[in-house]
Length: 367
Ligand SMILES: Cc1ncc(COP(=O)(O)O)c(C=O)c1O
Image (cartoon, rainbow, N blue to C red; front, side, top):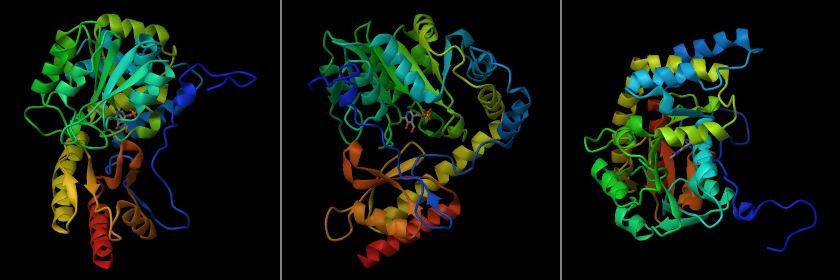
């Protein structure tokens, strides 16, 4: 692109398609059922809210610059080394910090075909080249990723489970992927939905981070902990990678109220277990109900389901989306992920789930 007069962003920046969050509101008054952003239907732990509010008394003070109380609580909870945890304003910030520290012009970073959109943005934002590996059965394909590793590869991003498909890679598959990567390539395991997985062959990444020099696991408080508005995430890293991230992150990148709420949320184990239980039950029931009315649902390990619609005959995903909006229900269009014929539905409360099933059933009957 020819340079315009005046300031120009670095090469790559204008190649980025801005991230467009899902619809979050509808015109008109009245309650909306919003199942478009994989937020928890149970809300945050009341203890987290209380801890957050208590911090209002200290707003003139800078927070602990390294989020130490939160890192220590995470270390205790998961049996980790607190010095190797880096907290971020959402895992989004950590994904960007990883790209900032390790990617530049001439470098390549790989993600899979239906991988989370933020990877491409982070790669392009730092002047590197995104390389897309095709998937198999809507699941990351280890061989396809390894086949795309070149001398220029510096990073591989895997969301496990992946958004928007909900599919996951077994620990064996992740280990095979890691074993095939050169030592200088960082494997980023984005485990934003790890807490929801109920599969014996899954491991979020802690073990690989502990035993290798080039694996990073990212986690979030936005999903099961219900703190999306606070923007709170964390990464578990080999010591040299934690050191690099700490050099470039903002010196006070996590707010005091976020630190306090995060610690309290971690300590409310019952709230988290209830959320897992609710999700496991309703993920299964929704999938079953939607398949019964003739929709195909990709098996999901996370807190959402990718629901596929027929392309034609008035029953398309677009038509379903419009119909649901009329009934004040918002699911996520996933066209930009490469799924023009699907909608992503977050598991909601019992009432919300029943309302969506009923509405989709009526939609298919009417179409
Ligand atoms: C796979 C994946 N990674 C990371 C994130 C970002 O989460 P956070 O709110 O921690 O930035 C999301 C949010 O939707 C996600 O789906």
